[in-house]
Amino acid sequence: MKYISTRGQAPVLSFEEAMLTGLARDGGLYVPETIPQMSAPDIAALAGLSYEEAAFRVMRPFVGDSFSDDDFAEIISRAYAGFGHAARAPMVQLAPNHFLLELFHGPTLAFKDFAMQLIGQLFQVALKRRGEKVTIVGATSGDTGSAAIEAFRGLDAVDVFILFPHGRVSEVQRRQMTTPAETNVHALALDGHFDDCQARLKDMFNHFEFRDEVALAGVNSINWARVLAQVVYYFTSAVALGAPQRKVSFTVPTGNFGDIFAGYIARRMGLPIETLVVATNQNDILHRALSGQGYVTSGVTPSISPSMDIQVSSNFERALFDAYGRDGAAVGQLMGELKEQGGFRISQGALQGLQETFASGRASEEETSAMIRQIYAETGEILCPHSAVGVKVAREHLGTTPMITLATAHPAKFPDAVEAATGQRPPLPNRMADLYERPERVSRVENDLAALEELIRERRAV
Image (cartoon, rainbow, N blue to C red; front, side, top):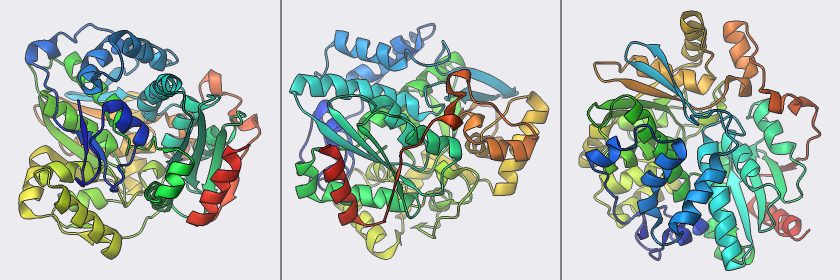
């Protein structure tokens, strides 16, 4: 199994190499050269398996010879051992034909744990085998950072630096990043918004001298292994509702397009997904793009669903790569226009291809709060604001095909928004009950590449 860049100018890599590299050296994102297929009998055979067993079968073809079967199975087992639900990704029914996939039972109460816990184990095995050490730098709008820190804290072969936008994440999200005591963990509060964090991260990867000097590695959703881990729960939830004999649709609250792109990969593998619905908050660039209005940035407005406060959705590049017939030069030109002009138009043919797979919708702040309140009144289920965005948009796309909405975070991560909507303040799970008492370690940093690079050089040497 080989991996190629969406911009067509970077070396072809193995799974392990692509995972450790993160962002391609031409600025693109790695994708599989070919998409492995699962037959209807293969998909049906997932029924009744544990999550770990299903994960092995879904992901194994993408790994190639980077890990042996025994090693990969053990890695998966360790990755999900700390989840708080035996099913790992259980479903509840909200209404006729509408189901909620709970992806918040991991160590940091967010869907990012499914990928980060796996990547942590993959990195540990690969780096130990190579005798190498890396510097992981990540950018987060809230959940990626805490999930990465949880996965890599205390590992000898890894230093972790997480950039998050100062004052633009929830208190729980911030404390999950700033309270770990391990010396290899560094939380950096950047003056700016998430797109600034993501831009500085990409700048570091594109500064090859610095990248090589500190052995830079990335675990943002630019990393293919992140996407791959998220493919699994599309299969397990769809099979639970009757796939492959029965089609399903999914609605995904998303800002960076990574989680829903995993659904696209599942569909390409053969899972009978009818529609993938992109749900955005008021920062609705993906909805506007899929509606034919072009991909044009318009500034980020803070919201009660901060993990979706994004205008530059990195993983959309992967979807564009396929929509443009895997033409790396065309994708490179679009990304150049985005950087220089703040946006680009999607060709009619590419847009039509995207619209054959993806639908979209948006939820305002008022609609998000109203949905939290309504679902609580109707079902007793408490949604986080991101999940509420998903449920609101899903309801606009319900039909005869079962709809699964991804619940991406535990409501206790956003207690103020939930309490304002329902009057109920969701408590943290017992294992995190003392989070507000733990001392914080955080550095506030300027939105300046040179200053960030110097800080990382100094801290990783300690």
